[in-house]
Amino acid sequence: MLIPMADYAAGVEVANDLVSTSPTVRGAEALSGPADLAGLLAAYDVAAPVADDVEKVRFLRGEVRAVMESGTEDEAVERLALLAGHAGLAPVLRRDPSGRWRWYVPTARDAALVGEVAALVGVALLGLVRALGHDRFRACAAPGCGGVFADASRAGRRRYCMPELCGNRQNVANHRARRRAVAR
Image (cartoon, rainbow, N blue to C red; front, top):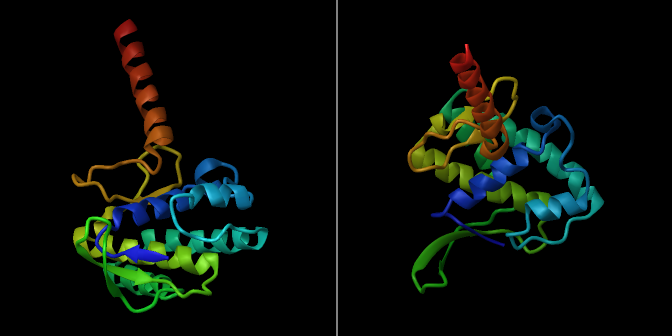
């Protein structure tokens, strides 16, 4: 796998999607088997997951969450460097599909799936910290949600770990509250 160094947003979404599979966020385990893991990683050139990979990636999920909850930028960078080093090798310069030179971090040929995912997430989140800062790691603003996420948006205004779920719930609750206030 070649992990692009300049385009961290896709890897950040993998990190966000991975963290949001937790029972802490969803109320039940969303990463229950190899099919769920394959769906999460469908856009990446990783080996087909097997049952043993699921438990390892669940453990990795806890490590990624710990990075997002880290108290300082230095702590986050130190943890991310360890993740990036799981299967990552020295950066290489390669042409992208448009013919421009880009930096990539390759992973070892015999790297385990969890090592490739760790390297992908580590490189992406290191890019986020470098480009946008540690304050882009946030807790979900939805009441009662225990989710965390990394905000790679340009404006930096993302508020929810899963906008389609937590954000929608909050919008519905706000709408109902406004309707009750008008009806009085």
